[in-house]
Image (cartoon, rainbow, N blue to C red; front, top):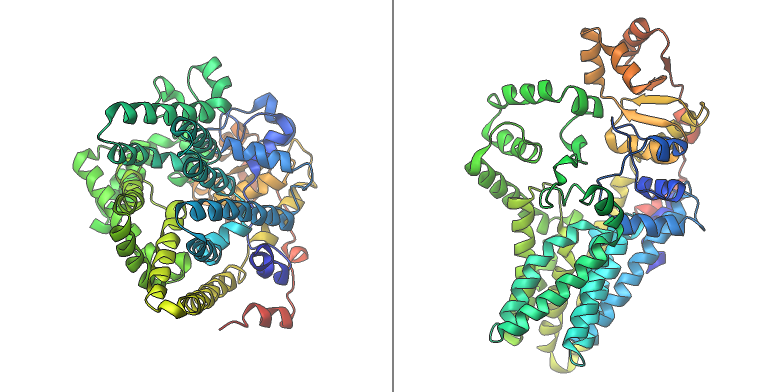
Length: 539
């Protein structure tokens, strides 16, 4: 399966995007979880221990793992890092297979594993390494540990399962949203024995919490709280932890740290001019960053807007391969509800509770189908097996035919998605900018007027300090004759990513700032007509 996942990349000769490994790179260099300094600059490696601050990002266990893998894979070897992603995802599916064999049988294990492997959202994960890859290994290990050990020792099963889930959350915080439903589900299954419920939840919870917090012991010892923006809202005394994801709402660090009040007022003044739908879209940023006074009704409406907006993703080709999978998901749920009612309610409740927590309490706006898409694959596998059983003697042939048809459909969906991703990849552009920066002195500081994600990627591949500076922000500073002061605060020596008029005005007002010379053409990869045909051969 690893070869199938990597085939588009092998044919194209490059990855379609750069794996997000900046935190891991910095851990390998400094031994500390650092991304920026106090004013939001992505620091050069040699400045990390001198001027860096602890990152509020999650995924510390993943960063440590990737830093360890760096012993064999260079940071600039994007193809090999994608291979690491594929191998990690393959390991998680092996563990998943053993888990489902115990929970159901081999047939459902094979069908669900195949469906997960070919679902577009997981195929993408198999070639793009981030915190999810390692988290899935521990998540499925946690499930498998419980089902295999519960008959021998319930406490032992809960202890090991909890510890593995703690490692899962340490790799990716997102999976903490499962905890409330785990507790509710365990209570419902054992509600006749409250002592058993309390002890079980306590054992699992304490084991998970201990493992999860191990990497934050240093923070807690020195500061009294873990430096994590997800925990800051709940941990006493952690209000000093800044919103580590401020670039989701603010154009650049300068605006957030030095012009936040004025920017907030601008957003509020423009808010009344927006349509009702646009206002709902804006609520998320207002709530997360405390802009204005939204009120309880506004928070509920925002949650409802985000919840309803996430429903179409369950049917989109880009995520699960289209609505065709639902022809088996729905029968699968009905069959599971008939045969194992409690289990059916537990796994469907996990989806609903996760969505409610994410949309109404955490106000997450992006797609999180990745977190629980494996449940849909499991239900589809149960549905396929159930439908095939109607054929009695021909059930194996029916299963094989249905799975093959679905695989073809999913491959077709992936073909379309990868064709689009490789149509205008930004990898060559980011590498070209990084190479140009690496020709500068390592103490240079470059202001970049490109997207925040690309700035992070450039920082990952560069030996100098870089910082996002949106062109609108620079234009406003130029109008106010403050650009020289702002650039001096950030120590800017070079700029890149701005229009000619902006560059001309920057040179006039600053005099000493140089424009970075980038030759993007030298980094372009040409794809032969044969490879182009192969990438589009499945229709």
